[in-house]
Length: 127
Image (cartoon, rainbow, N blue to C red; front, side, top):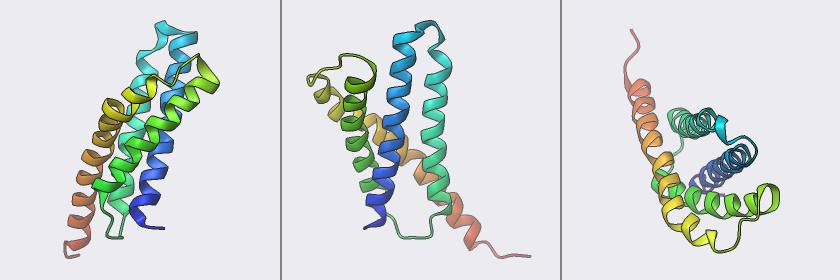
């Protein structure tokens, strides 16, 4: 399997799990929503940056980010519909446009920084 596909599927699934968890908190305890949102976004950003930092393969992170966005959109809507509330099929359109774009940005930006830092550290000569 291509490296971008593996990274996209894994990060998309991770974001979908975080999305469903935040939705569950929103339904059951809406007053405690701030911390789970920050934690969910932080986990995705850190995972993308760390993976790209240690990635020695020539991964196309743009395609991986788009795959992650689409996977997160579909799995997030399905997960919310099955596990949290009565999310309907009409939510899929928003999840596959704005939601997917936001997820792709949350993967691409930190992955770009992580990859740049990783390449820089690997290229610097040791004293």
